[in-house]
Length: 149
Image (cartoon, rainbow, N blue to C red; front, side, top):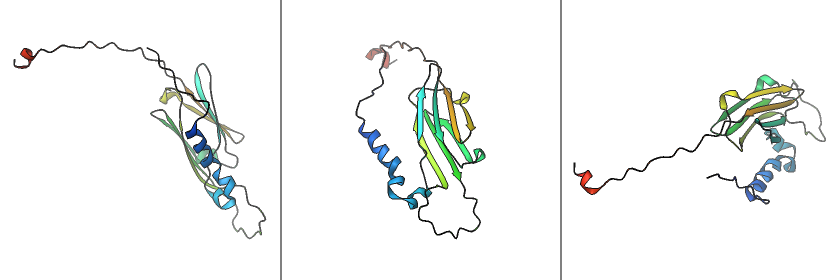
């Protein structure tokens, strides 16, 4: 029997996640110190691909992990200013640490995931795992007389 992944037109949990993702930009510069990077996720025949713009973040400050169907992005952008005595009218360029967990839509080969960083864009390619065939399990019938032996 084949299962079909549930994909509603209106996803209330997705809407709630979107509110919290966008919350820092609504609250202003104080909330921008910790940020959640926006992502694009798409699927090809061979892989699930996740892209995120991390302008100002050094590649060596980014960690990517995949475990049990969850992709984790973690990192930090640092401000290069020694003394910050400017009188800002707006300060929207973010710095600080970030953390994001993304549930992958299909099983992937954890040990074959690759991450490339080019011009501030992080591209993570997660090769799909081959579907496993259903295993038929024989049911053993036990009679009460067999239990006493």
